[in-house]
Length: 93
Image 1 (cartoon, rainbow, N blue to C red):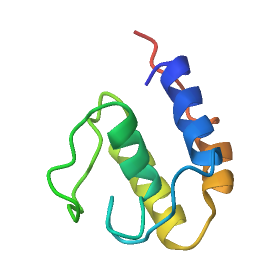
Image 2: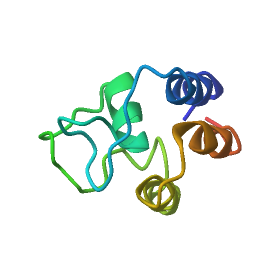
Image 3: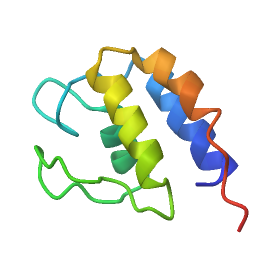
């Protein structure tokens, strides 16, 4: 993830544009925090209820994806999650 992508994702989480859902990337109620990144950067949801690792590991490692998904599903708000996203180290490539 680049610095620009990290900031775009955090801003989207804080924007109020997305409703939050739990347990899936996207459904009729809204998005998981990872589902928003998936949509923003065109990684391609396999279907609305896909629950696998949604983001390429080159973008965000598996442990970070798991931590953010747990935060989302345990009720942390998108604003709280955005703060955590901003602390994720960016790619050095």
